[in-house]
Image (cartoon, rainbow, N blue to C red; front, side):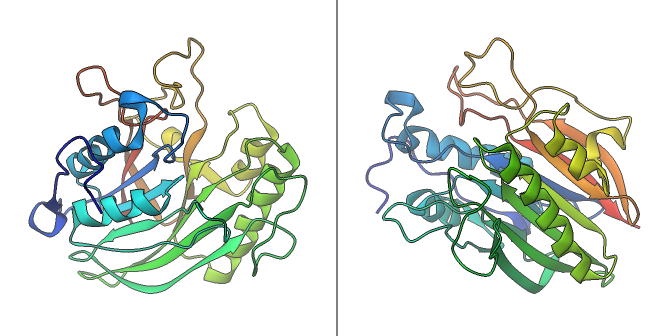
Length: 274
């Protein structure tokens, strides 16, 4: 099933090379396996580059967006030592999901699930003029060394409807109430900028992680293959106001001989649970 790839698929085991002192989280929109992406923008060329970028990050938790079935198969092969799960957002022939990967040497998983960003979140559905079915996948992880818990939410908000983005965020924040004040990280592609009502809605209860540390990089994330002159910051980590110590925020700008692994830069968060 890997014969179509143009480059060798890298394989690495996170259990043999991870930082035991901090928790590293990476969020990345990997750009779906689009039929219109040609040559080195095609997933079957840049898929191994995406995998290498994730391997090099040594992330303990990874949340990905726009992951289709072929991409998921490749990333499961490359990212050894991780538990993971994915729920696809619809039953089309080529659906997308927002999988979560977690370091099996550092975490146990207590709970996992996915809900739809709609008025009927427990089933495949869309609302509020959303152009696409949109989902949020989540996991409750337990640190093996001290038993502390972390709730992780990974989402991709709608690219057309502002109402769907705002209501989607509100639904995610409502879901967080089920976890009783547990430290939380909400990550993903919000498809909106920091001056938007979407961002304001998220900021009401959570903090943008980049502003909770002096070691930060407030650079743009969506670059459209390096062609966008007015790059935008639309990918975020939002963290609970208590229970999380943010140590570093970074935009990962890795390219390979001028080839971008995606049309978004991944973002990295180093943190600890207090």
